[in-house]
Length: 300
Image (cartoon, rainbow, N blue to C red; front, side, top):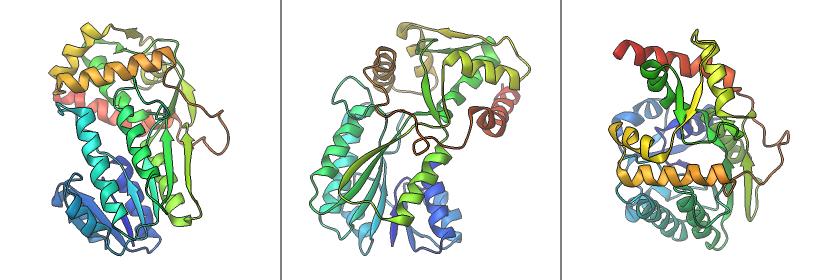
């Protein structure tokens, strides 16, 4: 039996579907029953639970051999690190009382640092919690910058005609599609050959700057001269809050951006065949970004 947390999210859906494709018994955990229905229709068992509910998690883990663990993002959280700690503590406590022997954790590049990386600090602490569980075999999967993070640029392009952000224009980001993360997690879970405690970085298809990202977007939407403008936090934070983000979460993301700009948060592995994934940013823009942009433009 496999258990998948965040099963209705970008990575969790890929993991659950891959496991179901392979004929494996799968138990999916989510906060909303209706969002799990597609997986239930394919044969998955659904558990509706909050990931801070240790008792519910213990019931969900009963009889399971392996777990995909992650902390779902919460843009409206007023205590981002505290919320991450509560999820990590509940999952870890339930694991200690269960027979689960294998865990793949969705962590992040930069989780080697214990401070100054915004939401990634919570992942660093979660890694440490799992490492303290005796007899657990765990892979801390540390992907780079999600391509999906650039979907927020659709509104900027539609309204202002250029892309904006906190990151340096010359900063190379290891850019990765979430479906590639999900597929790597599924590969690890289907194989279950990992032993002990280990970290693996996943650096996506290529390293790109925000200028290069903007050029690719511009070529795809008929704006070949699309430019990128780095904005200071005091200008961008109000925009983030207007989009529904809490002040505390905005501050956390600002801290992460500062860490990326200073290289305090960066990949530790050199790019290799093992940590490179197939989806190019050009393919992502064509398949995901452009349709999203068109929907945004029509709704405006």
